[in-house]
Picture 1: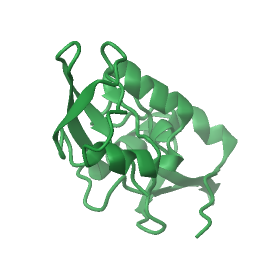
Picture 2: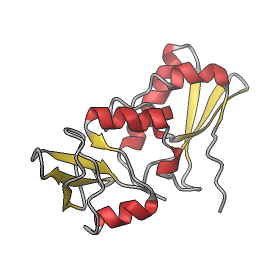
Picture 3: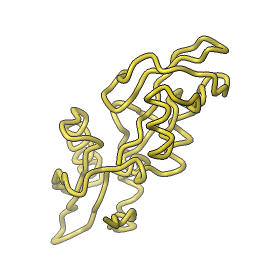
Length: 167
């Protein structure tokens, strides 16, 4: 299936959308995460289509409320619709978002094949966000949230989250 990676966003709404942070990874905006699939002005109202990173993600209610508040602060009414299909993929994350995530201490997702190798413990390819070493090991399939796995660097001994590749 060919999924359009480019969301339909009216350009004048981008600065406001870029103010809304992910509550779980606050250095990322909703645009960095790629969860905004559409944001358009229609009949004087902002209509937003929001796709969760995974079904049942508890952050979506907070993000929806934060989006409405950001537009209200800018004297606009926003309506947020949760859209489950097509499912969100880590391909929708911006490269800038992945960079900010790593600077924050969470390893960015690898490609699908590499991700499986790392999560099965077959290859040491997840880079430590503290020292940059790939001499890392999987500690737990689940980290601080379900979309992350917990790794530990065997060089500097620091634990860190790895954001799993989702397709």
